[in-house]
Amino acid sequence: MKPLLLSHFTVTSAIGRGVQQTLASMREQRSGLTPCNFDTVDLPTFIGEVPAVDKTNMLAGLEAFDCRNNRLAQLGLEQDGFAEAVKAAVAKYGASRIGVFMGTSTSGILQTELAYRRLDPITGALPPDFVYDKTQNTFSVADFTRQYFGLKGPAVAISSACSSSAKVFGSARRMIETGLIDAAVVGGVDTLCLTTLYGFNSLGLLSKQVCRPFDSGRDGISVGEAAAFALLERVPDSLENDAVLLLGIGESSDAYHMSSPHPEGLGAKMAMEGALKMAGLEAADIDYINLHGTATQSNDTAESKAVQAVFGSNTPCSSTKGATGHTLGAAGGVEAVISALALQHDLMPAGLNTRGLDPALGLNYLLENREQKVSRVLSNSFGFGGTNCSLVFGRAN
Image (cartoon, rainbow, N blue to C red; front, side):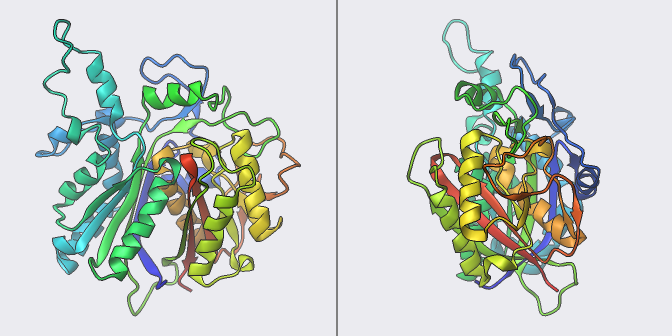
């Protein structure tokens, strides 16, 4: 593929609002996970909550989109000068030449949960101020982002669980390469809700402690929330030295089980191999792997087998979910931005909360930050039903 430029990017999660706070948390090896006190949830677990989301007021004219997911989306769009960058792109290309590609899993379902508490006691009807298509609907966050900027290009929402906001890079690339658009706002937003927390608990996948990816004692995920965005454009004639490029994308499906990965990680292996092939790189060209690393027994085992099959056991790698929690449909976007920060700052972040590596997994898993030249990063995102996506990013120089 022809590389694409991440001309601007931003992330807001439990470890920080914007890239500077996020980078500082990574350098300090600080986790944003705290004991769960979300809404009425009564579960012995930890969450990665973004502070003050509910204090965000929707912009005038966009009040119909008011829900936790779109409030976090707006909060994220206002960091790092991202909104100004998109507005400059609109002036350059025109509003109809910029697409929006957003990943989410639960979208604004919390708004529906709140509405159900106010059902009409006689008719059972939902309250009249509940607006399904602007809040819970999966397309809501893509529609909100498009209207926030007044964009008129194609808008797409992808909801393939934890690979959602990695796969948006693939959809955007295809539309840019075919000439349908000149630039794309890509990203992911997912927020805490009761459905997610109780749902993962019912599946037996929720950890009672802070999640411990690749640890011998790992017992499940810590759910988080986040918003991450990037502006994708064609590569211009001249680039700054620390410019970050999207070099390759690999997508696959395990076609194995609704909620479990293939035990040998076959789909994950295909995704990583596909991303390397599209980038025109060999495994040895990758300096650091941002693992999916959910901290469940089966996911980490399957991913380690897939990584060993493609890379062997020496490539430095880690999961950043011990810091942010598993941000589900936003995870691919969050980890794309973390990969970009790793490239720009020559920082391989440590995997937090891991006390004793599982020796059976056999990876070069980082328990401390490592600062050295980082030229290319591979980022993994694997979802329910075996939808997998791997992205390769590299520095322009």
